[in-house]
Image (cartoon, rainbow, N blue to C red):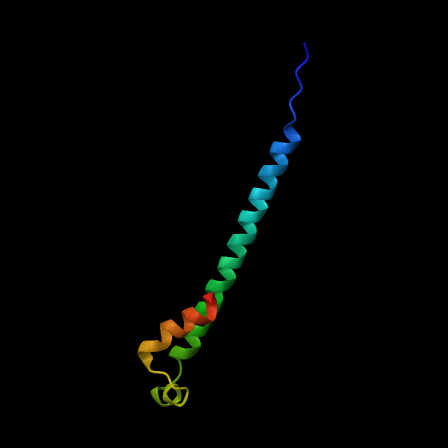
Length: 70
């Protein structure tokens, strides 16, 4: 009695999971870079410049998070 195992299906499934994982990591890293860049740029502004934008220093992290993840 012959037994045939189809391994290409499991390898393809694994390939798609790995490529999906890599794509997800790239997307997360890109969002993190937007967060860090926004945070750094806002922190470099003076209190007066932030006030002109309608922000206070305590809002910088929230604004940077919103820019990156929403």
